[in-house]
Length: 419
Image 1 (cartoon, rainbow, N blue to C red):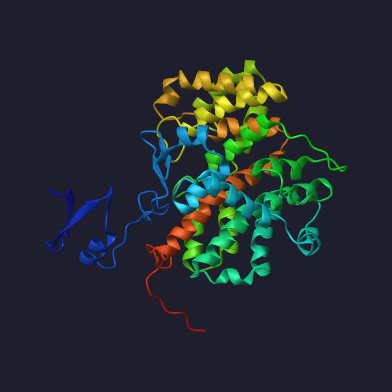
Image 2: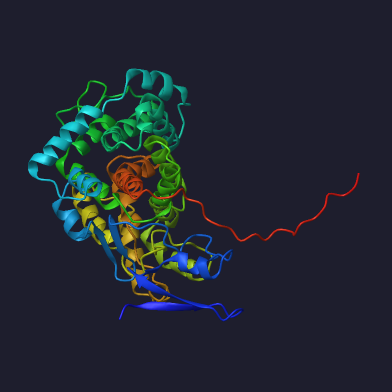
């Protein structure tokens, strides 16, 4: 017998039986029985706003799967471009397909010289890299007006390739603009992540040696950030995309949501917290301040995960490999003790406060030479395939424009006073 629930309107005695399908119930049955009465769910935390077959996330069980593949397998077996292909096209690429895809990416990676002169040079020298990146993504809409033909699958595909390709170029340009270094165009002979590192850090004479351990670590972090179901930025992309905005302004809107400290800025907040703790000996006092309500523990707990974030385990292992190359980050000992103390304390265990992916990622970025202002930019590069996969899926579903209801709490009708 199919699972279902029965809703009864106690005012009239009328009832409706609603089937439970894929852990959800159809809101149309509710609105048929109770027209004009809405669920009051301001953060949409109890509302499914989309049907998607891209990413499965079970926070209670600590499960994250891309197209059905466990993140633990994906992270150890696939490159970022392979994961990108999987998310966008719903299939694991063959060697020939991923090589062809990489060539497409390489062809689209450069940005026009006029973009540097007319767009990037318009920003202040001290402009935050994330603000520059968001504006630059939106500006691409004016360079590719054909992108507005969102009903054409071939045009959509080209724009998705362009965005994946140009994100590292835009990000590196934003950084070099900030530090006063000359812009570097991508090298078609380099792989995706090695190319980004070269555009970021190559010397004025053009020299830069790519360390394979650091390149692979950054590629892995991109993989871990590639998608995370209906988070704030992905929901933003779907909402803006539902208005049939072109992909550039759609992805710029998603990046804008990511820019907020409640979303993409978490690993920066972890680094600031570790710096404020200051030393290994101060961890116990900091934990006491958190328990008394005076301090705030960053990088622990998650809106969705009620157990250990599966990505955090992978990132922690990656951190040790990176530190063998760069030297141990002085904040690592503080982080390790903080994790050890918190995971042995029922105060944190009872509240499901386990380390999340942001707890160690900032330490890795810092050790690799990325300034704090670039942390969210790196997140945006990694998350772009997920944003685009959801945008493309939504358009194929022919979804209606996003239009949530509200609960009005203002005054009843009233007349203006006579003057």
